[in-house]
Amino acid sequence: MIPVILSGGSGTRLWPLSRRHYPKQFLPLVSSHTMVQETLLRLTGIEGLKAPIAVCNEDHRFMMAEQLWEIDAKPAAIILEPLGRNTAPAVAMAALTSSSPDDILLILPADHVINNVPAFHKAVAQAKVSAEQGFLVTFGIVPTEPETGYGYIKRDVKQEGAAFKVASFVEKPDLETAKGYFTSGDYYWNSGMFAFKAGVFLSELEKFHPVMLESCRRALKSAKVDMDFIRLDKDIFSTCPSDSIDYAVMEKTAKAVVIPMDADWNDVGSWSALWDVTDKDAFGNAISGDVFTVDTKNSFIHAQSKLVAVIGVSDLIVVETDDAVMIAAKDRVQDVKVIVAQLKAEGRSEADIHRKAYRPWGHYDSVDSGERHQTKRIVVKPGGKLSVQKHHHRAEHWVVVKGTALITKGDEKLLITENESTYIPLGIVHCLENPGVIPLEIVEVQTGSYLGEDDIVRFDDQYGRV
Image (tube, rainbow, N blue to C red; front, side, top):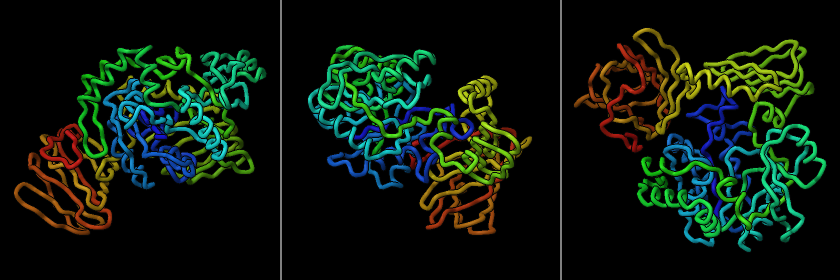
């Protein structure tokens, strides 16, 4: 069985913590591990697993690789999507990449919380049996309430071992309809998790959506392999139709079965859902960071960089980051996406990026900016190296705060340490790297007429960036 980790989402409903360039699956929301890491770690103890395949946005490739490395997970491949095309093409790519059509793929979105791991393992074992028999298995979550935020799967009376034949897939219902589903006992929440043989899925996809499969085959055939990364051709992949597994295959096939799973599952699709799965104090508050409360109940309060004080409120979501504060009634958190849409419409960077930006060599934090100047705190990992580059519109002043910097400046090479500095004039080809064994920290002051991140001409880059 091959775990396939789907990590293509942007998680905008958890803004401002989750953003397009650093979405929720790469954040440690419910434990010390990120959600991607939790997705793989909860598989520990399942026998017969092969190396995982991860499918993610090309912009997230280094985050994915590093987070897998941190938990000692060696992937068989990391497939990079140049643009999102929903889950069906992502799964098709994984199936085409597998070594055998008889390989069973365990499809796992990277942003789920599953607290009852033994129950999850039991469901996976049952799904494997059905998948070996040629069925396309979906996992149906036994509902705990009449939820309107999930799609549903109706089971048939006919049973195939531990699995039921799927009678139908149902869109998100209104409350009265959801109540009927809940009391009937014949409906499950649609988890978006699946198990099936690679060859069986591809055969059904060819039957119901041959254009999609052909686009995926052409994109993979022209893909470039770079270490663990499989870089899909953007021009070809952009011609691929966008569709979910449900619409493309599962709603049409006669081979669909559902395994009921009661494992304390949550897809953490909103701040209220995160409140549900987070430990709370005696007053029902889920608190993280530097927070003080007075007469506050049943609220989620997250402080990232500042002291947050909350007085005399209940059922609120309060999230503070270093560049944004979001406050919402707990029953209105689905409207966070409206704020994100407004930010995008006005061209605001806060919709997509954090003040702290992560790069394959480390990260930087834009601590101050004004007319013709910007100050950053840059941290370079041991062995990390920024690209050999130059700028047309800005000069840079570097002061080493911690560690040792190896600097290329034109034809000159400098080794500078703590409390030493250097100046990079406008237009000079330069490079910064960390030759040491501890993180390098520098303060960079930029001056010039234009300070955007796109004012970079790269001449060489060890991470394959253009």
